[in-house]
Image (cartoon, rainbow, N blue to C red; front, side):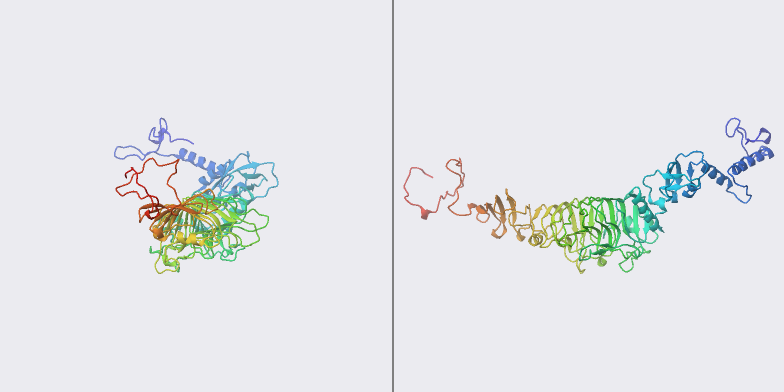
Length: 611
């Protein structure tokens, strides 16, 4: 290569001292334009042609990209950066077997290293690639994301096969499927292989009715790719989807979910959303209804799990599912570990969370310890209220046959929101704990199952329930809950302006309440199993708010607001102090102290003591 010489009228020192360049000349001052000259043009020609021929290409006068092709091919020949898995397969006679970077499908970068000791592994296109010289190249990227398997994530492309391939690969290798931000459209549901976790970047939040956010407004034609976060969007009719079969005899007996995990082995679902494809808004920017929202059909649940110690964090399920948004169930399979201790943290589940046990009365399978914190559970509230399925509660817990194995579930700092009359429903279960939770149970006039304020309801098969710090506006139905369940209902600071909390003496602790609907009782006992042990303090609403004090089942004394008097429960049988423990001073007003009924006095004599 050469620069333009001094004799060709260059612009002197254009690129630095001695580095002349070309100039257009100037007729007004007589400056002559630079003349390239044959020598210079020949030098440029041979430099470019030399690069092209060095790359093994034949000069083509009709091509204008040969220099680019040559540079790319020479770079590949260096065997350091490859443009595809196919290029890696074509490697042969390499100068070294150092790490290679391969640009996989749609820009995903994978690092491969050579393993000369392996002569038998099969080429799977992701974890192992066999080059044309027989070398086994192994993926050094421990958990390739689904784009390495051909996924696009723009909603338009069908990513079903890519997601299936990622699950298969993860089952045999890393046990993790990574989902980068994007909207991956899938046309049927999937059963997640044993031990495989799905991890996204972050989950989008989808507002429940009647709220509308940016993500919800993107549920319309031409906008779904704009939903921000890691999204698995389930589309189509789920014709190739699978069915989860349980031993129950109700709607949970057979479910067709978007995703299911049916193993005891723990797994994790982190940072992504399972969304049912639909048009919440029409092209004219109006809300659709159930008849024209083009929702994906064939999915009756968003997610089903039978795992032990499964973890769900920043996990979102959104859709209008006829069974439930998320289901935790006991499989009732002999020789397996019970489904226990599933955890939901910072997650949002629409169409409700169901925790359901098996129906085999002879089984010892249990489902214990589901834990939820900082999560939201919504009923099936459609974007047009009249189309919602209000038979689905925000939370449902039931063992169908026995309560003892379906127990110990805890909800802390969670939100429950629905229009359903039976907002939270407990069947055969025991030891349910809810603390510092928010409820928002509104009504829809004239809509069946949504026309009354939502209640927490139980059955005669429901065991112990503990409610603490439950915020609410309106009646939560606590009085009816206490009257219905067979266990004990403990209530401390549950909200609801019209709520009533009362009990029979050993299982309710309340501060506040509506006096017209029941008595408040505080018990201080050394034996919680007995109603006749220790102190009981009761506000008696039937006796004008009389305050009664009872010990070991016997009323000791009362304070009567009507008579403004403190009196023993049984006249003539109680003492105020003793001879050894007497009051030192007693203050009264102008009214004389009446020591007893005058009709009962005998042998009255005069003394020198006055007043």
